[in-house]
Structure formats: C-alpha cells, structure tokens
Amino acid sequence: MSEFANFWNLILESNTFNFIVLLVLLTIVMQKLKISDAVEKLKDEIVEAIENSKRARANAEKKYSDAKSKIEHIEDEISERLSIASKQAENIAGSISENVSRKLKQIENNALKVIEAEEKTLLTSLTDKTSKSSVELASNYIKLMLEKQPDLHKKYIEESIDELDKVKV
View 1: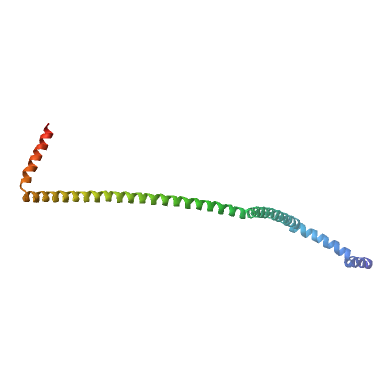
View 2: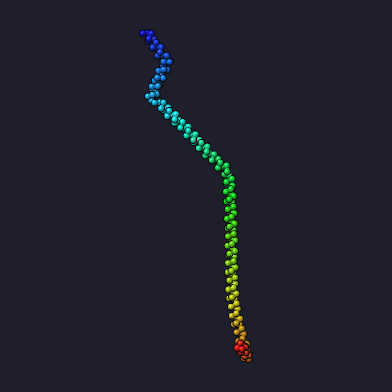
C-alpha cells in the first residue's frame, strides 16, 4: 500500500494532474456561472459598439464633407450676395433720386403757379385801384374844368346828344 500512497502523492504533486483538476474545476464553475453566456454577451456588446462607432464615424465624415463643400464656395456666395446687395442699393438710390427730382419739380411748378396766381391777383387789384383812381381823377378834373369854364358844360351836353343821335340811326 505504501506504493499506492507513493503513487498517489506523486500524482497529487504532479503539475499535469493539478492542471487537469484545475480545468475540471473551471469547467464546472463556468457551467454553473454561465460565463460562456456572459462572454458571448460581452462579445456581442463589443461588436455592437464597434458597429455604432463605424456608423458614427461615417456620419461624421459625411457631415465633415458636407461642411467642407459648403465652405469651399462660401467666398463666392458672399461676393455674389454683396454684388446683388450693391446693385439693389444702387437701384434704390436711383429710384429715391428720381422721386426726389420729381417731387422738387412738382413743388417748383406749384410754387410758380401760386406766384402767377398771386401776380394776377395783385395785377387785378392794382388795375382796379388804378382804374378807380383814374376815374376819380378824371371826374375831379372834369368837375374842375366845368367850374372854370361853364360853356364847356353845354358843349359836352351837345356832343353827348349828337352821339346818342348817331346810335339811334
């Protein structure tokens, strides 16, 4: 039996035996703890994370490409918009200038019309005053002449009658 005990000690002390025992124990523990499922789940999560990273990278590259293409032409677009804005400003300035010129001409024409109307009013007023003054002066002169020369009175009466006779005929 001592031989058997020696053999058994030799087996227990051997690395191969210990390794086999370790493998058996690990297999039992793995089956009990379902480590293969956990490892498989972890593997699936890592694969999914890698796929998500690839998609995110593809989206980022696409956005970068889009942004880069937009930026490439931005100076041309800015120049074009500035040119359009400048033309619109020139058109508006021209339109405003034309409107101001038109309004100034209208104001000038209206002022001239008002001045002409006032001139006519003043001329009419002056003419009326001059006529009244002339009639009054003539009347005063005739009265004065008739007072100085009473025979003119008869002469004017006779001339007036002769004129009335001519009209009757």
